[in-house]
Amino acid sequence: MKFYIETVGCQLNVLDSELAAAALISAGWERLATRKDADLILFNTCSVREHAEEKIYSALGRLKHWKTQKPGSIIAVMGCMAQKDKNVVFQRAPYVDIVIGPGKLDQLVELVNRAVATGEPQLAVSLDRFERRDLPRETRASFRQFDPIRLPETRPRVFQAMVRIMFGCDKFCSYCVVPSARGPEQCRSPRAILEEARTLAEQGCLEITLLGQTVNSYRYVENGKTTRLADLLEMIDQVPGIRRVRFVSSYPTDMSDDLLAAVRDLPSSTPYLHVPAQHGDSGVLQRMRRRYTVEEYKELVDRIYETIPGAAITSDFIVGFCGETEEEFQKTVDLVRYARFKNSFIFKYSERPGNEAAKLYEDDVPEEVKKRRNNELLAVQNEISGEENRRFLGQTVEILVEGPSKREARSVAQEETLYAECETLDAPEDAPRGDGLTSVDALVATGRSNDAQLTGRTACDRIVVFNGPTSLTGTFQRVRVVETSPFTLFGELVE
Ligand code: SAH
Ligand code: SF4
Ligand code: F3S
Image 1: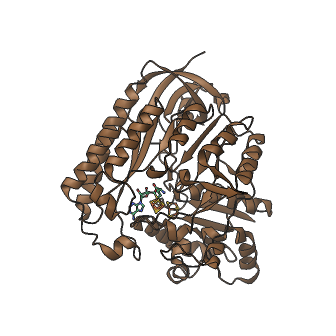
Image 2: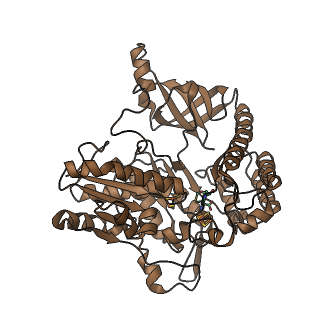
């Protein structure tokens, strides 16, 4: 039996897909790279914006035909939309076999077996969570932790891995679905995390990304001893083989001095900090229920640059939030100029029914205005990214080589990995992507088959494109930067 997984959303989903694949492979299933010959198709979904959900529903719509042609085949919907929509998934797409929330992934193989055996729809989701701290124990327990098997072959690159250090979120920003979709904040024990880091190192992993929705809020108390993220970084720094460690996403008010000092001092910790600001106006931040003012955020930026020279800070922003005036929007533009982010992920506000913002405020910024503000902010950010990258011209940087570049170098767009953009959902069934000719193919076609266009990343998470033998993939190399663009450094190998 063969399966195919399609993933959208943040890195938590990318990791969940890897773990789900490992569980299925361990149970005897084979993974396919396209959905064509699959017996089981899994969609790992995201609910953060309406657009993400609509894409999934229309992809499911296209599968109706596939399903009737292939009796006995199974469609599973996992991820945050499964948790949020539950039975609605079956109503909108009655041919779906399995709906499984992120807090129930430990039951995936069992549900697949049951669906195969009975042909009956299977639903496994966690209990509903409302905004309150005194969560009933059953609700907490219904979001189960799942971080079991790590199989190197389920990762795009053996030498890079993500490790979840916490589940869920307790921040309840007014616009966000994550606290209800992923449940309450639950931290994994330092022992489990360290064990996983060691396993990964034994598998040849060089770089670890620690994951959590508010990763720097990590706190684990055991026998009267409290472990924070800074302590974890120190512990992982001692694991032989792990050369780089980074963590995403950080919440601004939990960025303590000792954490910044750890990032500065530990050889394996990298000076890359994803600390989403979301907005540049304190009034809007308050409506968003973020727990800081823009002044406090700016102080944090100062503190980061003072403590960690050469730090690369990145952010997320929402434009067009309820009631956002032109003046408030310009404050976001000001913040981008002030903080000089390496890059920002910019999103148009999308109302999520049922959450606090939807109840309290009207989604009153017209779509064209959201679009215009999005483009304006993006243009300012690109200008700054370009300027910051230009400072690398002539410098030699150390990179971890990730492999052949997916796109033609001069047009390399943002090959960012923070939020998985789904490449195939929009495309007609099994259509080739792009022109079907990768840059490596292009080089082979022009006779330069020994060298390929490769990409790598600096410690501060900048993408570097250069020519070299593909055998360098998974090694650290020194590259001299000869050209830059807002998204990419172009370099030459230093012998
Ligand atoms: N935990 C992270 C972000 C998780 S969601 C943090 O707090 O920073 C990823 C991003 O999606 C958010 O940073 C936010 O910018 C965006 N986002 C979340 N809800 C949204 C909504 N309703 N509409 C538009 N963008 C949203
Ligand atoms: Fe959502 Fe806020 Fe939690 Fe981030 S911190 S996941 S934006 S509720
Ligand atoms: Fe989306 Fe869930 Fe991540 S809603 S952004 S996949 S936590």
